[in-house]
Image (cartoon, rainbow, N blue to C red; front, top):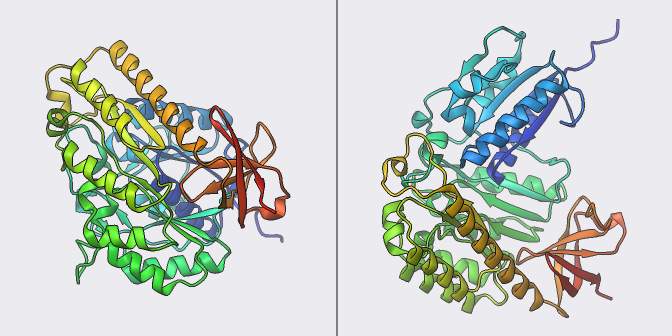
Length: 441
C-alpha cells in the first residue's frame, strides 16, 4: 500500500517582520512533522493564521484573514496564533469556524497539538501566561521560500511599559538568543545562499541584558562581523534611541557590512506627549542622536514610527511633531493612528481625540512622509550602488526589484538569474513613489 498523502497546511502572516520569522519557523516545524505547505490562497486541510494586535486596524485585518480561511474550506482545521490570539483569545473564540487558538510560546508545539486534532463545536484554547516566558525558542530555518533576505530573531519581549502599547502583554518580558546560536544560524543562512541578513526583535536594543554572562547588541554585531565569512550585508531592525551607546554607534558607523539604514522610533515631537507615553527619551536626545548618525553615515536611510492622536495631543503638539520631522533627515515614515488597546494605561487618560481629527492629522504626516521620501530618493539619482535583488518581480512593471543598503527599492530590467544576488545599479530617475535604475556597465 502507498503511504497516505501528507496533510496540507497554509500559513498567513499579519504584522511585523518578527511575525514573518515565526511563521517560517512554524512552517519548518510542520514540514519536519510531515505536513506539506501550500499557498494560503488555495485549498488546504489546515490553515494557520499568525496574527498582529498592535492597533485596532490590525485586529480587524486579523478577523478578515481568519474568515477568509474559513470560507475557503469550511471543513479545514483553522488555527489562530500570534499576538491577537495571545492577548484576546476570547474574542478569537467568538469567530465561528475557529478550531484551535494557540499562544505565542505554544505555537512552537503546533505539530504536537495538531496530532489527532479534529474539528469541534467549541474551539480549543492553548494560551499560556506569556509573562512567565524565559527563553526564545530557536528553530533553524535555512530555506525562506520567496525571500531574498533572511531574517534572524535575536530577541523577543519588552521590558518597557509604554502607555499605548499592548506588545509586552502579547510578547512577555525581554529575552535573548545566545550569541553562539545567532552566529550559527547566520552561518547556515549564508551557506544556503542568503547574502543579506536582517536582525529582528521586539526590543532589540535590550539584547543580552538577560543572558549570563551579560552581553550587548554591540558585542553581538562585532561577533557576527568577525565570525561569519561571506555575509554581504547585515541590516538592523528597529532600535530605541536610548540604546545607542558609544559602542553600538561605533560598530554601526565603522563597518561597511552594516547597512546604512536605521529605524529609530520617535512617536511624537512633543516632550509632554512623550512623557505621557512613558517613552525613555525626549526630543533633545532624539534630535542629537539623529544628527550625529546622519553626519557619520553618508546617505543614511532613516525611518521612524509616529503615533497620531495620542490622548491629550493638542494642535501645537502635533505641529511640533511636524516641525521636528521636517527638520530631521528622514527617508520614510511609518504613521499610526492612535487606537485604544485593552489593558494599557492610555485607555484611561483624558482627552481622547475624535477619529476624524486623528485621520486628518495622519493624512498630513503621511503626505510629509511622501515628500521626505521623494527628496531622499532624488538625491540618489545618477549614483551607482549595490543592491540585493529580491526574489519576485514588481507586479505592475515586471521589472526586477533591487533593495539598496539605505532601504530604497529600485526597479530595473534584468534576467531572473540575478535574483538573490548583489549587483550594481545606477539610479536613473524618481517618479512619485517609484525609483528607477539600470544595471551598471
